[in-house]
Image (cartoon, rainbow, N blue to C red; front, side, top):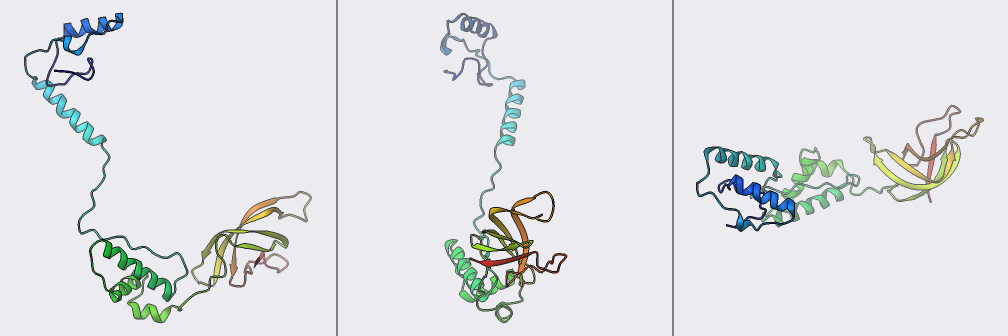
Length: 223
């Protein structure tokens, strides 16, 4: 019987301890003995060795990664569009849902897909969603768009790196990365420069938050 490492032996095939000591001494002296030279004990495993083997198997099972196998009847997760909700975006989601179900071997009709998408967005049914949403929404601001304007009455140029539609669907929370740092304290003895700011603007790019003199904190124009 061959062993991959003379110092690691199967539990069900114990070796003679004296032979193991001789082998270890020979290894330290620089003369490595072959695994075949280690005599095996003819007796079978003891009860203690069996318990150790069972314990080792349990430890290995606990260390193994727990990956749950997919169920045969598991349905694909519905994906949602990141655009502003409209009839067109919901139709696109319904088409994607049908494609997902088709890939899983399920036949989903177009009407059933529309109903599922409408309920997933909180509408009672597709007719309710159709009556509540516009056909299309022209998004005035998008990530990556070049903009210019004023921040705290200081001119700036930059790029939008974050755009989020607010709950009233009339305002946007934007994050602007300035091309050049903007001094937000021009009237003080010290300068405080900002490289990136967040602000809330309306559909026209005007911030509803006002400064002490009544002027908007930010005005944004598309470049």
